[in-house]
Image 1 (cartoon, rainbow, N blue to C red):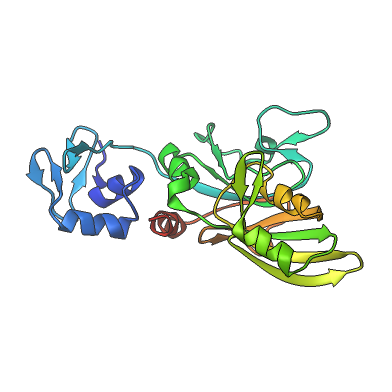
Image 2 (tube, rainbow, N blue to C red):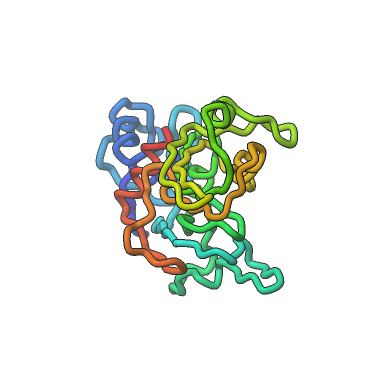
Length: 242
């Protein structure tokens, strides 16, 4: 059985970036088969790995992370609805990758960055609210905007018994009755941005996610197309969320 570097195993198990896991190993907190692990050692599924009193699961997969530029009119579900297409129809057809997990869903009318991964631990890490991944969007909306509305959006608006708020908003160019905005938020509730804008009398006509944590939507990636991210990008995700 092929062995894997210990820091890589810890990272796959959700204990941080590889560099962060190297520091954990160097601290002497990790044991392999009852002995304090050394930096650079390799392990396999037959080894007993512990971080303190916690057993570390050995995950024998090559983590892969894909980014897709979602078009409008596509739903983030395997089931189709009416004339809407499933985003799973746009996924890469790759051998041995039949169970890609979607991360960072968007509603049918929204476009932009969505992740897919074959690694359940990574998908859970990205999706977990405690890791505070900020999301950045471009929004086009019709209606009057002023400082009071901006303050409302930043301090929070109670909608459906939930306090919804943006972490940042930058006012952009105005074309006719529409204006562009760049907004950020730390949560990913269903239709959250649309609800915030609509509560202030602003009608959203375009909404595109351009960044999720440290990862930007790649320039030149056309709607409906995907690309595979590199291992350094996966490490960025683990580092960003800690």
